[in-house]
Length: 239
Image 1 (cartoon, rainbow, N blue to C red):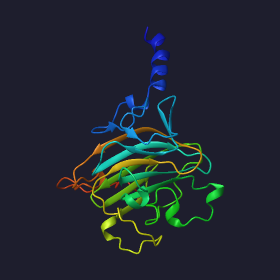
Image 2 (spheres, rainbow, N blue to C red):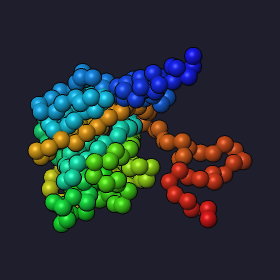
Image 3 (cartoon, helix red, strand yellow):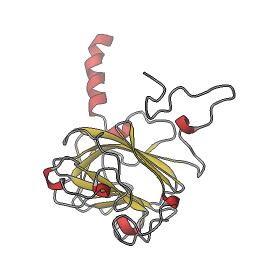
Image 4 (cartoon, rainbow, N blue to C red):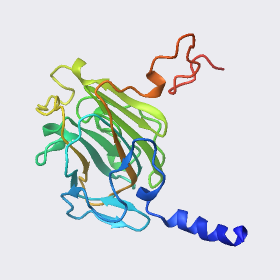
């Protein structure tokens, strides 16, 4: 009977590799939940049960990406430190030789009480600080979306915009007073960047390549005669 099948179906859904879950329109898995196909620089990173990628090395995709939306869940242990490399080369420090590194960090970690604003989670490392206050406690899963379109980088954490910057408007010297020669890269690898002993876990990594003029639905022009009641970011105009 249907009732007899329910527990079986529930178990199958719960244990299926995340990459096999129903994907949003246009997205494809960046990690298949089973092995490191499509990645290089494996090092000490491992695949855990339930389709979890545990990153402890400098992982990079084997191909370049230009304009894209990246979605994933991330679980950061206490004092965890990792990063997302954007348009980075095969070799070199993604934070400088790549367009940027987007910080992945336990913001409330005891080791990080005196960091610079541009070193916290979601920041364009060394260049643009992220808004804080939307990260879940250590060891909880956070949902993150990264949009890289042309010169614009947007980071959403658990549904909140924490970084939104047009890199074309940023001039040197940068906040960290260091050179970032790759800052204007137009294409490159996506990286998962392990920095310290200990790993950060990712799951449901998927990516959607988009056109250079792509905008999210909440920013697209309304049809003629309509006005937007909700902008997808805050509750302005509501009470």
